[in-house]
Length: 565
Image (cartoon, rainbow, N blue to C red; front, side, top):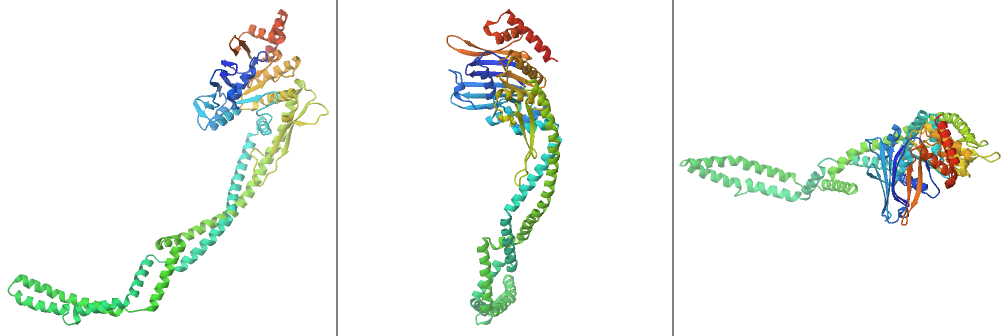
């Protein structure tokens, strides 16, 4: 419910604040007083586009603020979902600003939001009906939502939604697997080739370094043999060898050692060197015999080394990392193969999910068909009261095919409200009805029937719904708006006193002028005397008489009496 509206610097409006109430609220005033400006302010608050030309002359900024009470838990939940934030209070304060430079901004509870978010909140909070437009009721998708609410089909719709989500999820997975199938199969073939190639190569940890050392030994076998043979000779075999020198030194040390203990210790240490030198000579002699040219082995080592280097270049990995990569190929192959197996499993699951979707859709469609007839019949009764006794309203349901790529969000039905306004005329979609008066009355009839079944939109705004309507029919319109006001806040701009007399609250909109400026104001009519005076002005204008005042008084009393029934 819109509790308060404040408007600053909008065209003729300088600074207007109006406190609103529940029920049927009527705004009245002479043509050109500025009623459309106040409705335009509400439009800006709901996210409509606006330009700098709307700003009052001499001012730099236009500002509109609305305080909405979220009296229903459904409203609060919907608002929190849109804002992605929890609300501490059961209210929203929406603010819209336009500057002379063309900048537009919006706030919700003093926090900046986009104009798109403001628009979504507005569509959730307010249902606006003009003579030629509707923000929601004329849209088939919203008609379907209201039909489900009217028929209390929330459980069936939720079951369909769950089944639809399951089908979408499986289709998405299936699509991804199919789209990646060729790539996956190429990857599988490559993995298997690489696995077989690397397994056949029998790569071993540390092998590359070992092979490189062996190659160097084979390339230098002759030099290695010569070195070891020469070393053995110099250590033991040839004249003047290390062993010969050592033996001579040992004898001299033993001779002198008898005279000095320290020299005797040197002699003993020289004695210990003899077996070591002998062992070294024997080792070198054996090595000289082992190192010999082996062209056949060298060729084999060269081939193996060349292959290892080729693998490193081919796979772009060092030898040790290549071994680790080889060891992961089996797991990669299993993962890709599982995706192939998943595809077969998803095919089976998708068949089952589609069967469930069709079953829930059929149950929802069957229930909707029954409810649609009831909705049309109840609205038909109100059309009779609203001066359209020959009109015929139908709620047409058509099956929507289940496509291969898309799953409708609200079921396999398309709903269109069809109106035959006069005998002999073809039925036409409500959104294409030519007569503004017929459209207004039809919308009011439907809104009256559906009012109790819209848990979110609690404010309904009618912009001159009584256009092209006479006094007798205006009386009926007033009764319907009063009835609607029992479950909704109804804000109606009207020029008919018969309609305004049924309002629970009434405001008058006036345009005042001075030598320098013109301003639009709005004032509540707090007493019956004020309202009678306004109704008399609406009946006869400035030519009103005591008789007119009496007529207005009787009209107000009768209307209020009927409105309370």
